[in-house]
Amino acid sequence: MQWVETTTTVRFNEIDQWGIAWYGHYFAWFELGRMKVLERFDLLPKDFAAAGLIAPVVRASCQYLKSARTNDDIVIRTHLKEPDTTALTFQFEIQRQTDGDLLARGETMQVLTRTDGVMLYKFQGELRERVESLVRFFWPRWMGYDGP
Image (tube, rainbow, N blue to C red; front, side, top):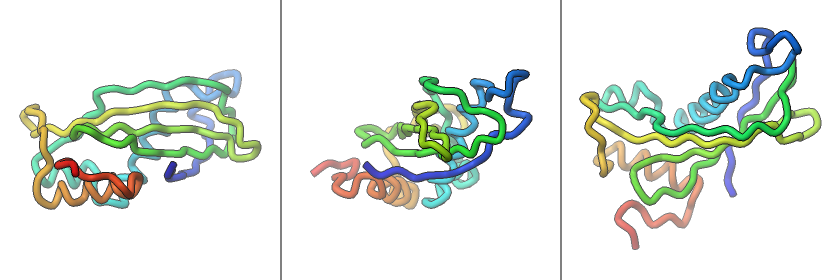
């Protein structure tokens, strides 16, 4: 399975009084990993906005396994689930870099809408090409939105 890795360090402002990362920051780290992936394919929020679109997260989950602590170097691993709709579902793993311990697993789902909130059920034009390139990066044998 193909993963994209991004590293960061747990900063002082991300911890509580016991030196443990606050749970909400895991979602910010997921976002960091997802943005690194989307940046490779020119699918950042600014790219959607230029096309009159937005890509809101409609579902997010996190399973906390071990605590990230002050100054831990962490690796955010990001993977795209194989899509069967225009929704993009990313999976994440956060590991401590020094010992490889798995700290958390999570998932987010994004959909594509026009700025008036109407959801798109098909990608078109250049956007479709970029999204299909993204999917094929993770799933080289993927048959596309039109199927075989």
